[in-house]
Length: 214
Image 1 (cartoon, rainbow, N blue to C red):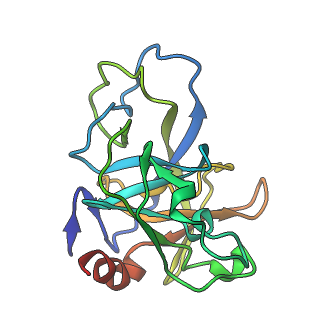
Image 2: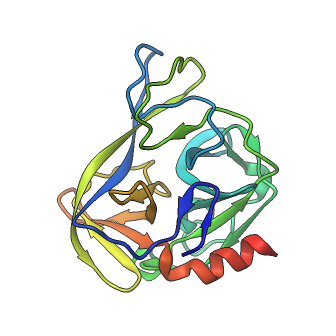
C-alpha cells in the first residue's frame, strides 16, 4: 500500500478507531500526550480557516497537500471558495481540487466528501496525532485536538460509521486506526445521537495520488 508523508491510505479497518476532535484552548498550560507543536515531519492535523475564522480540519498527505472534506471548501450547491479566502495553518492556499462536482446535500456527498488543498508549505502551528511524547510548549497552538476512541458501527465500500461525538469544526479531520494510520475523513453527523460519517480514504486513493503527482 502506498504511503506518503506520514499518512497511510489503508483498507485496514478495526473495531476501534480514533476520531480527532477540536476543543477550545484558553491558555497554554500543560500539553497532553496527543499534542505536539510545530512538528512537520509526521502526519499532521492542521486547521483550515475561511476569511480568517476557523472552518474545519485537514490532514497533510504529501508535501504541499492537505486532505479535507469537500464541504469545507465548497458550500453545498455553490462554487468552490476562492483560494484567497482560505488558509491552512496560517499559510496561504494555492488551489483546491474537489472529488465530486458541487452537491446539494451532505447526503449526496456521502462516500466522496473529499478535497485536496494545495499549499506552498506549512508554516504555522501543527498538531500530530498519536505522539507518545508531550510537547514542550504550546504557546502558539490556537486549538487543542483530542483523539478519542470511536467504536465502529458499520463499514461499506466508501464510508465508515462510528459513534464519535463529532461537532461543528471537526469536519475534514482524520479517523485513525490502531496503527495510527488515517483511514477516513470526517464528513457529517446526522443528529446528536446519530452516527458520525467518515469518507474512506482508500476508496479514493487513485484520485488522491494522481492529483498529488500531477
